[in-house]
Length: 339
Image 1: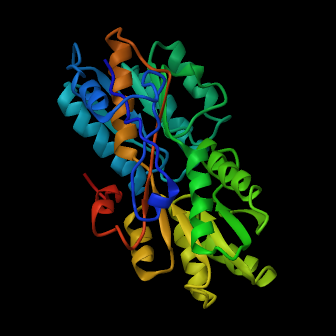
Image 2 (image 1 turned 30 degrees about the vertical axis):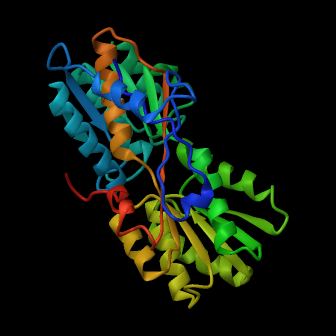
């Protein structure tokens, strides 16, 4: 059996006060309660053998993937399997592809992978499947996800919508809003931007001025924000789509002398972002559940190897962090720097 995430929906009015949410997967109906979810989680058995499983991160050193690794390692000990983790030094398919190719040539039992591009990583994963390796997508995906036995990811469209709703509460007067992204072609990033943009269209008080691509570089994000503020000095809110874009956005706003005047909602909750939240440069953070993504991903891999039932798609939720809850219940949602 595999674990199923909690079927709980988070209302935004509570979100800014701090709460967690998880979307149900295809096995868990909307009427499932906490006891049902807990019972399902407790029913996960040991693996039938000590499988050799590889985890290829999107990028080394990112607290999101470190936290995911911690969740995988914790689950691996419980299930009795061996997991080795590696990843590229940058979120770049030209760096990730050789790693995946090397993993495939070694023929592990299963591969957990966060693809760095929906197109470029398709062929390497097709080859993994052809080699008989059970592929599980964690966090990101590819154009044809059927290459994998399961795909585990956050509800990124919902996260983008929640980010805009947070800005509505933080800047109720309305105004111009901007998205600070990384690169196009990354599934999770594109989904977050779409969720935000679609939400903006529902409120005429706000004007969407587009998306900027920082190429996963905080310094570039800072420069882009500076340029955007020169063009549109009346921007009232920015949605930064990942850890690095949030760091750069916070820096650019601070350098422009507009801390506290522009509402920033960041996606992810690394230590540097939490520091920006405490300093007031970032007003809210949307923390994913990377440890849960890792745990569910490993469960899916082991279930597939043992011939059990595997849910093709699982979505996990998020926690909204603010100054009001970061030192309370929200603290456990902050990403780890090490395991």
